Amino acid sequence: DSLGNLYVSDYGNNRIIKFPSNSTSSTNGAIVAGGNGAGISSKQLNGPRNIKFNSSGELFVADAGNNRIQKFPKNSASASLASTVAGGFGSGNSSKQLNNPSDMIIDQYETIYITDEGNDRIQKWEASATIGTTLSNQGNDLSSPHGIEIDEFGDIFMLSGANNYQIQKITLSPKITINSGDTTGVL
Image 1: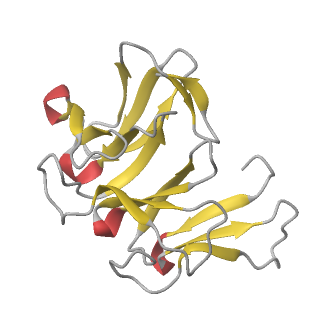
Image 2: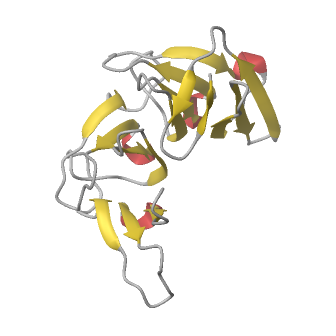
Image 3: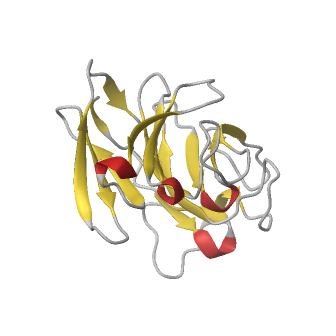
């Protein structure tokens, strides 16, 4: 983060850990999300993948095993309750479902662009929406996308794995400014 703290998505232990900027190998981290066993409650995670922060410092987690994106409050801890902001309706490919979400970017309106790895697509999920919109899918040779970033020109790049190992680009119009705490650019 902007203070030099390191955040680790601890997939096997179903938690997010924060280490201070001056950490060494003997420094214990603090649990900032999850850590309450694998599960579906609002204070549990199940196989968390990538994390991002919005400009307000809220923590977003790609909760892959629960097929959802969770939002934790700023300065959250193990007991903090999250809200589900995308997915969470079981594994599937309908517009309200995700299947193994692995990464995301967040714009200033809290629209989330999600690599929906199990469905071979990128989902755009508007703030407070109950369904997502597909931006790109396997028909565009997208297979198991598991990384997404944005450049300073507003182009979205995603890493597609499985059988094709490609980096693909999406250009949106109109372009939207993004500042998600760790990434700045335009969409």
